[in-house]
Image: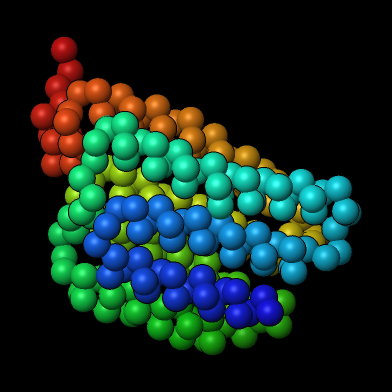
Length: 210
């Protein structure tokens, strides 16, 4: 069942590559948060019950509910247009993300380590590089934030592979997600929205020091 959820996670990366609306990105992030909740529940079966409950609450509350709702609020507050406005066509993005997944699969198969859970390795690296690609290929700052959140999801997937041995590592990773994505990036987007009518990265070139 864990492998099925992780495969659905990869499919969500391919889907978001062809998505044209920013709200779709938010929904995919919420879906990924829900998938991570399920993977956490199935994977972390050897840790203490109270720690598992804490991790599950952190995952479902922040990754699946709070962060997507906060992003939706930022989109409405800053009156961001619905289009994602990529630099490359969506078909090209789909090809690139597919190549990323294929390359990570080949890389995982080339590693001869019995302790390596290859499915977690593939999903985490695919998510990490897809997030980096979204940061590089999208015009709006809000989509850059979502790319960063994808990177965090990739790191979280990798931490789940060793979560039974080091549960505190998973806790620290989630709390860092909360502070970085909600506080720092949220304040940043709010301030940018007060300066510009539409948060396009091209407009950052107009920022000057006085």
